[in-house]
Length: 462
Image (cartoon, rainbow, N blue to C red; front, side, top):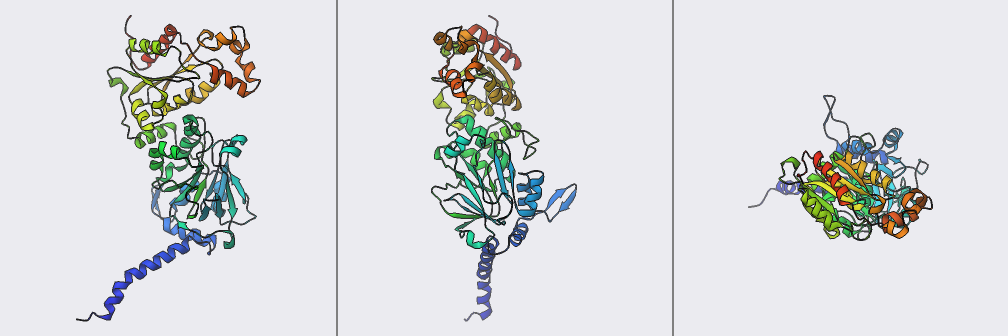
């Protein structure tokens, strides 16, 4: 029995529609239409209803609003008028594109649809939050070049087309140091990308496999796509919008009033709990308070660590000694610090793990000679901003190994500022590298008794 001719047309209709849809999709992201036409089409693709002041708004664009949050003041006006704006601060620069761009990951060039005469055209940015450190930027962070592409002949053809925003950042800089990784990459990445709700594609300049493996839970909770490695995927990628660089507020800290507004370190800690599947702990319910001692080898190590552990146990703590090889796996660190009531450590990168402590826990930082400012600003103040209790134990001259080398009457002991006045590297070599600690157990015990009091507990009677 013959089929009616019309049935063949009906069967072909879905395939014809699919071909037309693919054609339209390609045109939307091409540079052969004017930038304004491209943007209008993308606005239609991204539009959805929202509520503002009790009124349903239908003609706003979510992508544009998300990108708009990353700039402020006149930059928002420029972004709206041109589709491009940069927010520049002392430590970082963030450039935002709210119109389609092409990114050549082989050369790290971003081709954007704006005219040559526009402000900041032909602009170069180092996407790492230490802009003020010129030497570091020039040696460890790959620059990203922003080029105008109003003319199609200036931009290479798309090899891959994406329907999410691109975020370009670097994992170079002070690679391998957990303090710098959280301070200059992870927290800035949270600030810049969290509000996109995973609708992002990360492009990681200076790609390091160990960095991606170490922070895989965080990266996967900020983006639903695999991180692009420019070294192994040197292609031209087209995006409906892009962000180059990451926002930075302060040392291990977030200001609720800085761009983007509304986040706090408590929000970041909640994000970490979600990423690592950490359940909130009520520290008052634990039978014995858990104390984690950050153990160091070499610089700023505790020379009498075993005696310290004994004293801590006698105070009623369940003591966990976190050796350096235990601190590299963040899954294990998060699990270890979730029930932790007191974190003890000498000033150093290991205290960055205070971000995993439950709120109400106590951070006890051992402050060496010449380390007062960095101790307070790197970990003490930020710890309070994370909802922690903070105690510092300032060592006396007799507790520093430097006294046996230089003697009590040397400026190294009684006037550290005179050492730093000779240059930061001089001070760093003495107080961060050469110094070790022999803790006065009786005096340190008093500090831990205060920590117990902050937890609503008392020390056992002697």
